[in-house]
Image 1 (tube, rainbow, N blue to C red):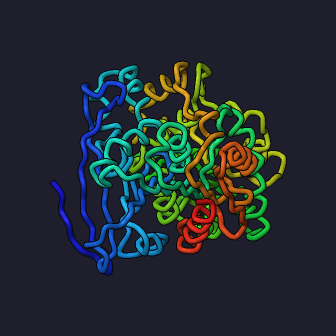
Image 2 (cartoon, rainbow, N blue to C red):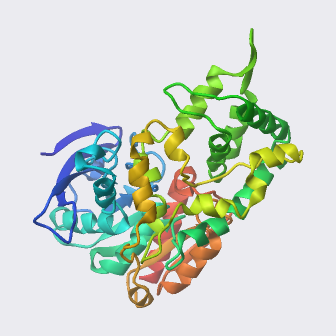
Image 3 (spheres, one colour):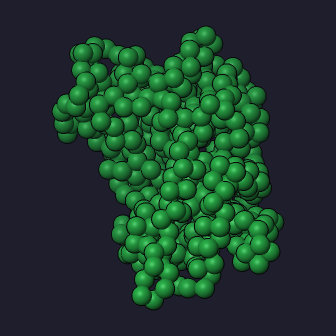
Length: 433
């Protein structure tokens, strides 16, 4: 069943699809996908080429735009757009603490979750494409993890693509998660230093909060345990265009005076909870490291193990040595499944995934080297989330890929400067074609 309705300047159509859970077993269990078609009101009756948007994450549903916000307005000049809720996200069949116990125990839950990586998402796209486009190839726009999906698409089903546009999402083709995090921690340290240079008053504020958390058990509304490590993970904000400013405003409202002495303010606790909780996107925590896994080497809580190689991130030691506290970035740790009530029931399934040694390859380097699909990628200089060096190595491995390397935007450039970013990438693919 499809339902169409209007917003300013656009016509929206909600679409539902049934796809196999395991595309290697098409007669087996099926799951539901949801996608929202968007077309400009004045072009609704026209036969337009399709652009499918693959959201970053993993674990986030597609953007819920109002009208022609961000990059969407530019895309609608040329395309009919499909905003896909990747499997397990948004209105697609959910995978979370409420639904995963239906699969059985931790081992069965982990087995189920192996079908929620880039390879399965791409096969979903190919399953629904013929019915929407009449068999014609479409253009894919992949942001961050969506870019990982786009590179998998080029590896496994390039015949389905007219062009590929990638923003902040060129993955390492053969690197282990350990390589990703060894490159990430120094990058995060640079972002923290830049934040403190912009807001030097935050050095003492962050140290004071960390000291408070080392001495007091702090439970946020809803049961989230705010440990010092969880507080440090708010550094994930520093990878966005407005993230440093958002972190600053959060820190400045941290404490209030109470009859019992200084305490973390309700306002700080509420905002921190919204930033830290995985209740709305549990798949991000569950399959984040698995999104890098290939072959027989387990991820084995890579971010946690590699962090030990960078002792400057130890909060207690930083305070004892009178050094600034270092925030951390985009990483998931075993304690994440202890602090967050949305994840606690899934800790054993996460352990199973971390120990897994039978991951399928995600990228075909030979096929990428012979690529014939026009591809353009925005690579953000010193991107906190995706290593620039890894991205450029991958760019050189994909035949015909054209890069736009810029320091004008952070990782969220497709949101912050959407029309210009999309315009640039479309021009690059058209030049290549």
